[in-house]
Image (spheres, each protein chain N blue to C red):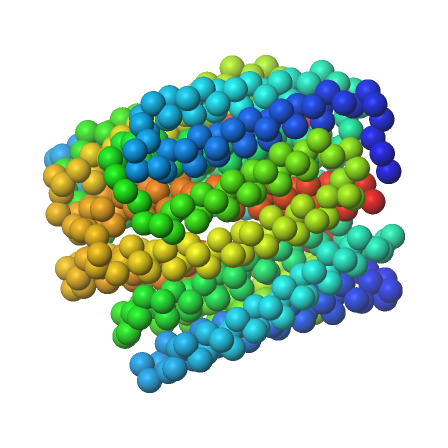
Length: 203
Length: 203
Length: 203
């Protein structure tokens, strides 16, 4: 099925939310460079997060005031919340890097952020096509595949962090940063799973 | 809309559950004092938790045996489960303090417990008004605001715990206690989000 | 109520998924022995996990292509996802043991795996009876009881791990393994709670 044109406002808001999330991941990626001014980038990322909150609130307001929604109110609510959760994790990861003054990061961290970057790109590409969710099969399969791969990389990264290369406090700090990145990857999978469920209902 | 009077039993049970949760948080707060007998308070908190389990089971039994419920069965189920989860975390936090013999806690822990105390007060105030969920907007906005603030405090508290002030095992113990408190704060936000969703459906 | 015979395919798939999960837990249990070849068992567990993924995909495919499902599409989806999550944790726990080369484990780890074994047995026994979910009360009460007990054991195990008996990096590794096992126990409770909710709706 196709949703009717009057529903465009919701689709536009989800597209804007995912596009904003992609910008947030881009800033996180920029912050990994060893000469990056992380504190300054964190300020810009916080602005991106506030922008994301605006999109989320606008979606919730619109769900409240609209009689007919393009798909279940609960799914609209869950999807906007799930996009918001990913951006929260992305912002938290950079905030922790700044607070902990972690300095150079093990190379595996860059690999995890690359996965986030790819998942953000896929998600930003999928949201504008939410009107025909059954066409998004490739998107959610690929995000699930990325998450599975990231899971493997994450555990191998932990094994390195626990290998004796780092002092006790640095181990704590790196683990916390890496756990937050892993949670962001999981969050992209949650978004993809919600889209899959919407497609199942609409089919 | 307003729910009909026959539904009062559910609202009374949610009010009792939230009031019981507030008592649990009060005990946790009491246990922070440096001269508190934490083991003894933990026994009383465990009784409060058992009382909470009774409320939860009573709600589930009633959902099973009642033909008409004031709002979706699933939302009743989710809300009672979410209140139960917060109390579990509150009880777990104190149990860990006792098991780990953590002694004096960094002052940021008291700030987190103050947030729990405020969220418990707001939740206990909101539950008796669940019959008109659309009036609870201030409640869930404020709990979300508290959770955002607590997130910032939590990360700054971790930065202090990882600063070198504490020995390696104390770092582990404090992190575990603090993570459990942060999970309790998140739990109050989950409760507020469920109430918001109930209000959206009923509007 | 009883579900109609035409729905048997779903029940068969859930039974197969739970039986496969039980085999995964059995392998994890085997891997705890001090003379076990964990890397070799991990390879076999990975195959069991792939088999589980097949069941999950088959359930989702069937939800998509079937007009009438025995219970809510969303609950079918959630239940298969929840079974999948437990197996992911079981597989992750063994993968971490291998990656971290943890060697002998504290005895409390065996107790947690025994709980997983019992929960897997109960779940495998319950899934073939999903056609009459109201008969499964004993199952979900017992899994909830097991989870509560495991929570206590888990915290006492952490207290031992943080007691000073292990070096700093071993503490990190053991905590990570034990957290993953605890998450698997929670996952069995999630499965039981979904079954309870299905029973409530069908009653």
